[in-house]
Image: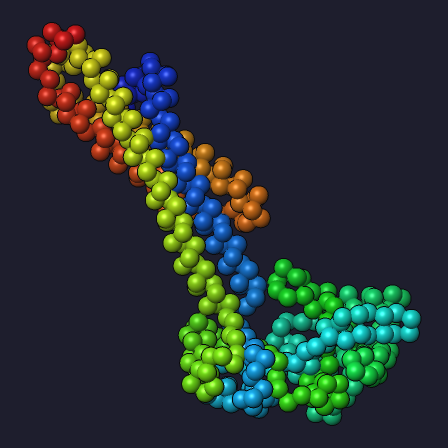
Length: 395
């Protein structure tokens, strides 16, 4: 009952001195809004970056041999099986070779087309679908058949009238070779990773023996098994390759590793900025202490009368402490609303997904109360120590 009465008295005091209340709130509002906005923006950035990494597949690892890796004679097609046998937790290793070429069908020409030699498992592994026709098969690969699957954009460029499947196109690198189009990929959502819409795929063996002779793999796409930590597997692969050939002959990319690093960096940076912004909370707390000391000085008569009527020091102390907490908490709530508005606007401007941080809400609720108690204790204690006669004489 006494707590509710103290809160009502605090609200009446705030209403009676609106300008002073506003100035008291301002430091807390700015401090809380700054901390909340920074923490929410940090959370929004982390969520957006995590979504990007998720789209790339957290269970994927990519190995790309460097230009001087040919001298090691390690990165061959057979190394796919070696790697899978040596490292626990690998579900599959898909070799890939690539280059660019000019592709022509009758009068239509597409220049700088990405040509990739892949195994038949590549399409299912990347969740690709055909809009027309079929994927090439393992038998197509073993037989080195000159068949291709093309992306939807490339199909539109070469076949404006449609009917790409069954047609023969010329793929020119050093010389022109004829390939049958057996499938057209469905349009791929580029927000979910790399675009395949303008790419031409041919069987791996066809590429390495009939299109561009090579015994070196350009990229290994690795899928980890469910239940295994992709970051740990990436570390194991790096340790294995470093021991086998050294770190100068390859590059390894893992979305899971990048996500872990990104989360750590974003978290550290957000905490650092929030700590700097929190300084303004201390400044706001000093402002509250100053205003409360003024309030005690102005209300010495009231304090003297209440003490003369039998009010205990603890009652006086709680009255002014409640007022300090109410002022600080009110500023915290206003700062929370302002900080959330700023963070949502900032997230939209930055192209991030707006996300509220639980830590920011905790700061907005807990810190102002703590500040109200910490900085309000001295004025409240000073008021409680006043003697009735002294207080009445001052008034």
